Structures are given as C-alpha cells and as structure tokens.
Length: 312
Image (cartoon, rainbow, N blue to C red):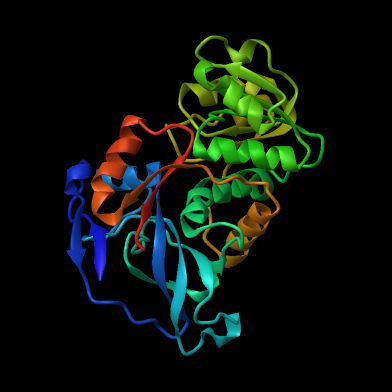
C-alpha cells in the first residue's frame, strides 16, 4: 500500500511516498480503507520537530490525525463493538501513532464511529479536527452552561470556527476575536460580538466572561485574565507557551486534552448530522501532494476551509 511518511524532522520536503505491506488487524482492531485524511497544523509541527517536548515519535512516521474510510476487515475480538465490514467510519489516531495518510490503517475498534450519513468522506475529514477540538474545549474542559458568556480567540481558524458553531448551538453569548479581514465571516458563524485584534484591543472592552477559549497562547493568553469573572474558566490548547496567572485572578486554567475515543468521535458526527458543524473544504489534494499540503498550511495560503488528502 502507499503511505505518506517522513524519516527525519524537517520542512515539507522530507515527506515522500513509500510502499508498505498492508497491515493486518490485531484482535481488537479494525482495518479501514482510507478515502480521506486530514492535514492540520499539528501534523506540520510534528514533522518539523516542534512538539518534541510534548511527545516522541518513531521514524519513519506517517502523519495525519483523523481519517474517513470504509471497514474492510475486523479483528477477532471486535464483535463486541458491533462494527461491520462495509461500514463507513471516521477514525482517530494520536500524533505518536501511525497516522491516517495511508491507503489502509489499522485502528482500535474503540477509536472509530459511523461517519455522518449525509457527508462525503472528504467533507467528513474536513470537519473532524476542528470539531473534536471544539467539543473537548467547550464541553469537556469548560463544562459550559446555557447563556454563559464565552470569549473565543482565533475564531476564524478551523478550531475557532468549530468553537463558534458549537457555542451557538449551546446557546452561549459569544464574543470572538479574529483579523479584520475575517470579521464578517466570524459574524456569519453566529458570534454576537466580533473584535478585530489587528485593529482593537479586546482587553480594553471585554469583561465578565464565564469562559475564554485561547487557541493562540503567548501574549494573547496573558491579556484575557481581567476579562474573566472570578471563578471563571480559561481553556487553552497547546500553542505558543503560556504563563498560568490563574491564581492571581481567581480563574481556573485548564489545558483541553483532545482525545481520540469512539464516543467523542460519535458525538461530533451526530452533531454534524444536526447541522451544527459545517463541512468547509479549502483544497483537495492526492496523497502524492502531501508535501504541498503541508506547505499550504504553513504559508496560510488556504482560507476558509480545510485541506484534505483524498486517497480513493
């Protein structure tokens, strides 16, 4: 089978196509014929060696965190999960695992879910990265309640977009930050107030937030503390390094851990079927153009949608 892989840290040019034997599922695994694989900033950072302080990988490494495909074989013990050959599913791997950018992937039966019925495999792959992270931030880490005030930083990105979509569904009062050029787009997602951070300083006007979702880190992370109510929650994903100032302001600071379990994937897919998450495809590339996909992400050349590798 064909895979996209890299054998050393470096730029997109270290990615290349290789041939590997088709894997056989272990007893608790399923074998998925991959039709579409995600490409995301985390894949680029892993390839570049920027996340070595968080985890270690083995070489050669296949990138890709999420994929969508069809089950073609079941492990001997997978009957307990009630999967069937021919099921169209989404699956999740960890950055430390062999990833989704391969024609076939073996994955634990507890790490898959039926894909949204009305979406193609490419559309499904386009949703997964942002929507899973949004659910982990807003529901699992922040444990929001209806009518709470939420501030979402980086709302025009894939995770930020999904956070706004989910917050709208949960009936939260949404303030979002983005670049001025993206203001109307973020407003169209359902944000109540949109602040262009390249024109205005949100820290001068935003107050009484119950929850802040920080997808940027660094200096942006320092500034929202005064905007949060005492006892409020500041949720962040691993991005630029942060200084935890929660004790100084009486704020609960939590790192959202993005999981890969089947129930989490199923929740995202069912919400997608309800129209909560929209599929936004920015570019579709073949597996052979994996290096180009990484370059496009790192250059910010694709706006308003995800880059997806289509394998079949």
